[in-house]
Length: 98
Image 1: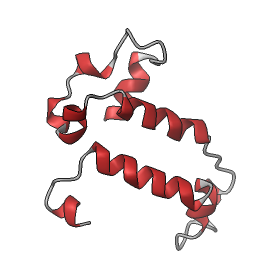
Image 2 (image 1 turned 120 degrees about the horizontal axis):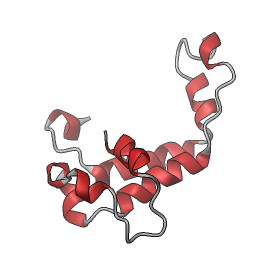
Image 3 (image 1 turned 90 degrees about the vertical axis):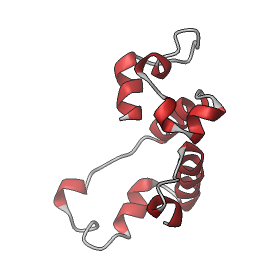
């Protein structure tokens, strides 16, 4: 929380947080632990594909170290790296960076 207050939270911190959440178990189970979420009918049948989280991590890992440390360096041309055969569609990459 300190880094967020100081506005120094970067993509490296995001990766660390994402891995910690993944180590806690399936997202569906974690959500049930949040007060009010377990009985929420809109979320009763929600399924989060672990591949989605891996895809998000792959996008962040495709950034240069400088881009991970300073997100202001990111621009639309750096979001989509066509030379990367694992690159998904431009729309998916933009959505992950939004």
